[in-house]
Image (cartoon, rainbow, N blue to C red; front, side):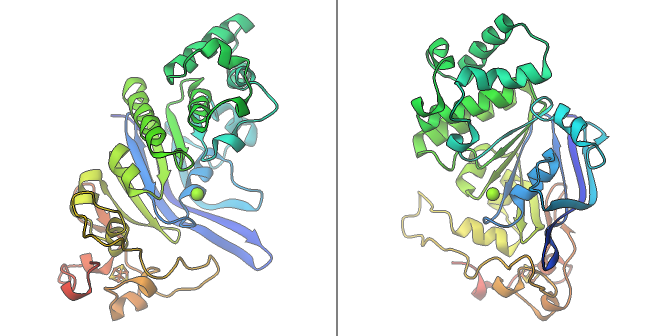
Length: 333
Ligand code: SF4
Ligand code: MG
């Protein structure tokens, strides 16, 4: 599998009246063709800002302060907006969370589907129309010819999300970024949309970066998982490693908060405490105020990424040689 995206030591900050606040603090990861990487963590952990940095759509007061983002070997952080626009919707596409606000209410579905084709492909109106119909079919939308003439409010939430996926796929992107693509949808539609993205990944060989706070979604679609906490990557691994032998206390906390269908006695265990503010200085490990395993060392020094296996890394002192087993009495129940 070819590597599509390589992000190294990314630092993304927000300029505020109180100074520069880092939301992403030295994040590194890669995505291969035909692979889904899920980025997980609570809202505000930096997962969306990470993907917006990749696609060059940061809010006005946001900026990449350091690091490198290479897409198909090309550095993106030094590209001009004009060059990035050529990539967006063409080689890299993004699907956002809210299908109602992501579509423009005053334009027809057909108009919005043809928009990326107009921007990136030289096609006649007839070609664009037939391509749009193919795209709607590809994402399982019935009666595509009629849909082209309809407006977003005439479609259900699930159908609107399919339209957004169709728009994202219009130019056959190599990389699809999906930020909480199913959060606003009910469970049945959610499952259908996740299946659809998974099928498209396999059929088209796309790399997918999926941002979610839902471990159920991760279990469904991920090949690899990257767990973020307070702007840092705290654990990465294959989906099997993350679910069967999570190493970082934060990952364990996230998993403990997932209801288990086989175990009806299992308590829903939310991780106590909340994410630190961007301007909060925390010495040592940024998770220590919430960590049931925190040791003296954790407060003194920020842990590095410790290699657990070929693909699994954990940013936690518990992985340091000699302290490999955590105190049992303090585990999440
Ligand atoms: Fe907890 Fe310490 Fe590991 Fe941080 S380094 S997650 S505080 S045990
Ligand atoms: Mg978000």
